[in-house]
Length: 162
Image (cartoon, rainbow, N blue to C red; front, side):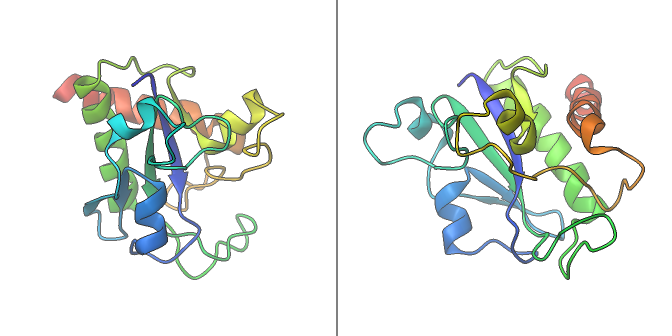
């Protein structure tokens, strides 16, 4: 595996069957982790149709981690009925660190990124224009342009502790 891509489900605070088909790991609003239907290794080869399709144009070699929630989000002023929680975000940051350690993935902008960042870097893919993750309700002062760096810094803090 070569990278980790971070998402939100745009659903409720709990994973559903569709979420489990698309992400390797999901973090619910209570901070509990759920396994998706596919293992990260299933994304080593995405030509067989048996993989977690979480990032258009970037699934091969990518681990998909998603926080459950943000249904109805349109902006910081309208975050919807299922905002991400602090406990959920922290568990996600720790999971990124654990996966980076397990799969020997450096925590850099090229190897750990949000779906939003992937879309910016790959504008000819279907990931272009994705908004996960441009806002984290527990951290309202972090700008969309700084979100990836913020998440990576949190993951690095956890990485140093494991």
